[in-house]
Figure 1 (cartoon, rainbow, N blue to C red):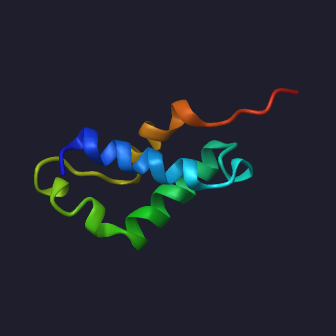
Figure 2: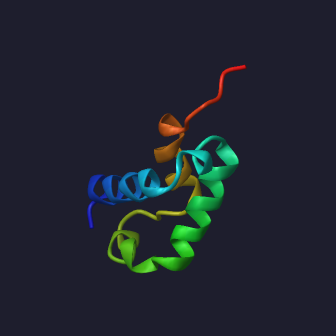
Figure 3: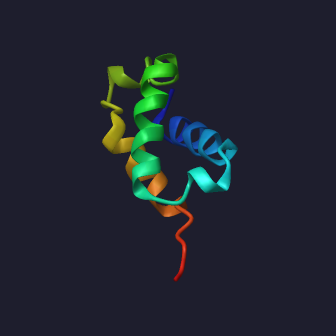
Length: 70
């Protein structure tokens, strides 16, 4: 899987979560760890070229965090 395809699938999975679970950076980190653990096949072919780890996934998700304004 090429990186843009992997990124698109990760973002798609992210938006399947309820909005309340997409508010903070800690939500993105937990999601990344869980995704790598539960669906390693999503990144198996991609890992041969460039390592996809939780840091990469979090970088993909940061622009999509729903930030609460006080």
